[in-house]
Length: 158
Ligand code: ZN
Image (cartoon, rainbow, N blue to C red; front, side):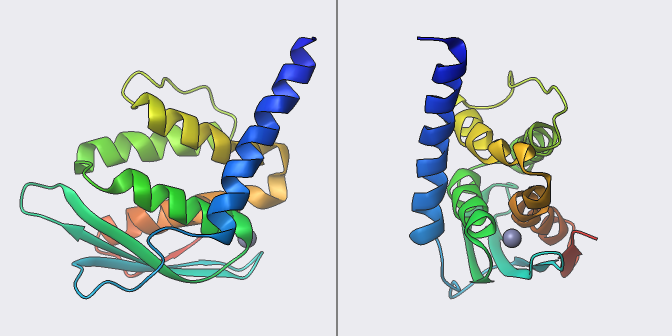
């Protein structure tokens, strides 16, 4: 078995995870209450997602959910991101954003500060770097999360 074959297997595995989240998104609803929201728009693809976060007074994200319409990759990314954000502090969230952004743009990034489970999911999403047109689909929910936490109401990939 060559290394190339193993890499292909791994990519297939990642693809399954993204397909599953794209078809059956988690946290896909408008919560009764939230205190940080932003609308993310990717005009290149037409992805338009509304993100709802609940941050408590200890700077911990207690809830994360989203709604809207987008391609399978943007929806999968939002689904996986909202799962990862629950229970994270804002500092942990910032580290995760940086790791995701670097991974998707092909910049070497240390995973030292990232939980192994999260690093695996980010690496699955970062498979889009092989398809440059889709990178903005994968990073849209993450830019939207940054906007929501900075109390901006909108994020655009342009
Ligand atoms: Zn898209």
